[in-house]
Amino acid sequence: MPIPLRTISAEQLKALLQIEESHFIDLKSIDIAPAGLTKTAAAFCNTSGGELFIGIEEIEGERGKERNWSGFTNQEAANAHVQVIEKMSPLGNHYDAEFLGSAGAPGLVLHLTMYKTKEIVSASNGKVYVRRSAQSLPVDGEVAIERLKYDKGIKSFEDELTNAKVEDIANSITVLEFLLDVVPSAEPDQWLSKQQVLVDGRPTVAGVLLYSDLPQATLPKRSAIKILRYQTKEHGERDFLAFDPLTIEGPIYSLVYDGVDKCKELIEQIKKLGPDGLETIVYPEEALHEVLTNAVLHRDYSIAADVQVRIFDNRVEIESPGRLPGHVTVDLITKTQFARNPKLVRLINKFKNPPNKDVGEGLRTTFEVMDKLRLKKPLIEERENSVLVILRHESLGSPEQLVMDYLEKNAEITNAIGRDITGIKSENTMKEVFYRLRDRDQLEQVPGKFGNKAAWQRK
Image (cartoon, rainbow, N blue to C red; front, side, top):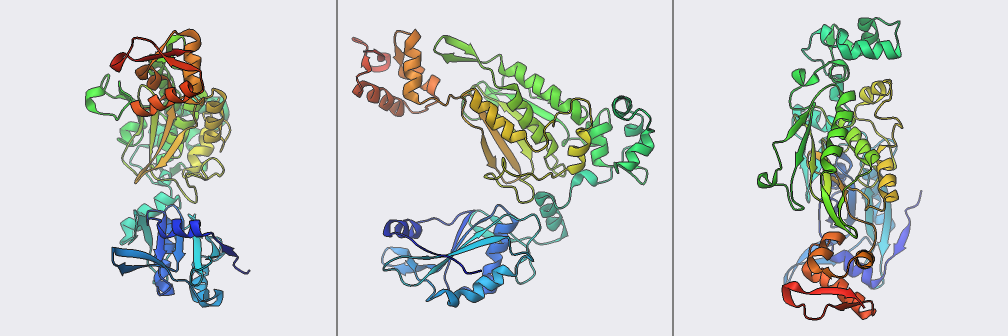
């Protein structure tokens, strides 16, 4: 299939030459050996995906290092580079390619978009690489390769055997109540073995998490939910903790529901300034439930860390151990499905009133219910060893609209109050909102109030 050619404008060319190399972008000279190119390509595929521009090089100029567009003379000149990328995966669906040309710029730049893959991709030298900041680093040793398999969801820690006793999951209150509700004729040992959570007389991690009355005794530091309440809108520091962190324990089924109930209780104690004065913050329970369910079910249990919920005055942060699995990226997270722990997902769905009622719909539901309440959409961030979801209690309305809504029921508004109801942090940015409303002939300053006491009122 021929590779398309796209002509870019002079402005786009200038922007491309100024682009910074990063975790997601790399620039290469056409002199790079095709085999050497596969190191960077493999690193992108094994991490979060990224873009490669071949034909942009750095040269020493009068002002130090400068970018220079020096592309391939024609499309055929890039054949070796394209062919070696094509051979990296059997189906060739791990990348997309186009040539970029611009008036006055010599040659064609090969633009490769590398996708995050479900499988581990190796470079031409047989080695595996991952992307870290603007570097492509080799993954050396069996332990590191195993870690990558867990990260990508190729291997799931849920299948690892534990040292728990058979009776811990075959004679627990949790499994007996579950079987009475779901398969009353089944014998616990036989049913658990059939579901492959009891293997060779030993419970698996999934078996312990689902059916032990206290999984935390067998899997400490990786099977609970930690809840921290910070009385601030800024960064979480020990000085702002309202109380010692709370730990929610129990089998996964009750863990999710107990965690949501506790979070809801703590959140509803927070007061926020609104048009009617201090108002109780109410996050949509479905949003909290779906994000926490995802954090518990799709986390990487090989990492010895609990799910953390951090409640601030203006947001809730839910951090789940482990990077996004398989081909899932931040951009695709609401559009695609990939279960890192398929047994957990399948078997918890057999419980009465399962927390994952609509399998695969979790975060999509979260976005929808936040939108219905006119709250800003959640923020999702992939970190070095975790995924962070932030639910913000900030209205979708423009700052100007929020100011005018406030003045519907209040005589005046100060800069501090404006920042509080809009979520704006900068005093100067808030002033600009007032100035825009003044210029539209909607606001005026309150006479006699200046400096720190300055206020605005409807005109």
